Length: 414
Image (cartoon, rainbow, N blue to C red; front, side, top):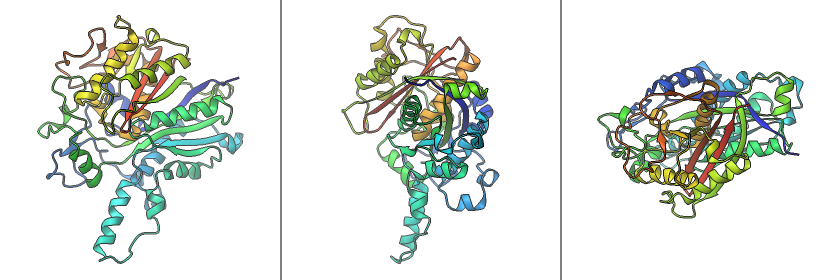
């Protein structure tokens, strides 16, 4: 018999808040995290802005030794997971440590470390000058490993990578392991630290990012007729997934139940989504079927919508295809307009938004969208400008990634 899976803790480190209450307030107020890049000189790139973490000080959260031996993406993971674990309130000394696992996601891993160490090697005139921490800091699985080491979790432990669908993939895997009885609690989510010269320059070179350098805060404008690309972001989102009966027995606060999750592939293009959203539609259909729900039951969709001309429209075509073109109660918003696109961490952060939307019966806005693309199906309702009050009993979140990865998760109130 499959177990039920609920979320009992959340944590967030984002460009619009370093903890969940601050982050959620910023999201509901529609406060953009985008600004001219301060971490390095981006003046020679086509795009010169991003959604960086503001006033990030790792010493406020981590020891000197942990900072020294971890890349930024692992630091972000440790900080967000610490918040989620504290929020959940479970006590490891009352459990078998092999019942608690970590399934974490990142799209790129230690990019900052990679760049730093290669530069160091080059400046050394070819002499080996690599740090002994180079490989441990670089490898993508180190975030999940360090969360485990930090907390003594001895159960399932690994990392998923599926580009910008990554943390939805991690949540899906955690969901399935708990359902199958292979763990009681899994700390899951994703972290990304991609705002480095090489990573940022690479995305700039393929013309995927907005070039609205004169006004970064309004650059991410999903669904708008003048959208021109995404705004890169950084940070982490963490969720504690727990077997329902275990959570109830210990009196845990439950944010919601994860009731369906699915993945498909577009099998179409390295970087572009399928223009008709065929794979995305199937992922949504499969996730809803697993949840024993239909699109008519969904109150809120947090869209992947990154503000790219093709991607935003293909996702809405996918949604329309599963509504059959009829009117539904579904309301849609794209919160990357506020946070920027946190890539491998995006799905986790947006899952938290879905859970808080259910808790507070409110739907966050899509900011900067002033003129909807006329090609958007007219049976779909996009929430723009301001947050709205609305009953949210079921929320769904999409995440898509380079390589054609589509991942959808569905949450329901308990």
